[in-house]
Image 1: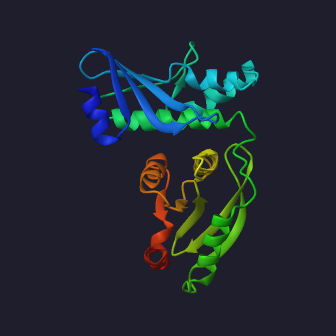
Image 2: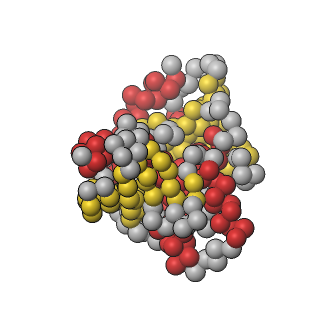
Image 3: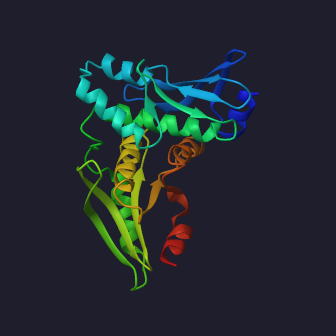
Length: 252
């Protein structure tokens, strides 16, 4: 029953290990490329515990990073803001009802990614890639109405205190749209996408007056679906191939 619930909503791989214990394999990975695996334990008819079985912390440690008490506390405080706990066994955990199970899995997946990224230099991305430059060019070419203000590479301070660079900002009509880009390479390195997710969460904790948009290169339909799922709770994901349509909508 749990697998039916999960698969119908998310499409994750689901493997029952016992009547009340299920393993979930997501399409998303931690920094070293290992797929995020979650576990659901059922208590009674409508009580579930979702955990990562300490995979996230073990992954950080396995990369040679010293998990000091201060760093563990930083991770605990970070995930707690989103309703996830770091328990005494080192597991990321969240309690759920059956109705909220899909949301709880997404929530735990995102917080595993965030925690993994905390081991690097707070979501620092590589130099601007060619795809981001291409998207910026399309925005510059488009004739936005005068009531909308278009700007590039604005610096905003997030809740963490870090300065975050936003590639494209579109402001006007009472809305502030912050626009990022993703371009997953053939090697399927998700570091850039995970970094953007972390930036958005950092910014959203500091202000609720932002609308987040991700423009994806959508070279692969399955990959685009996974990107959309990753940003499910944070941003609207737009395929670059349909830019003529959504640029008109953004200008409206």
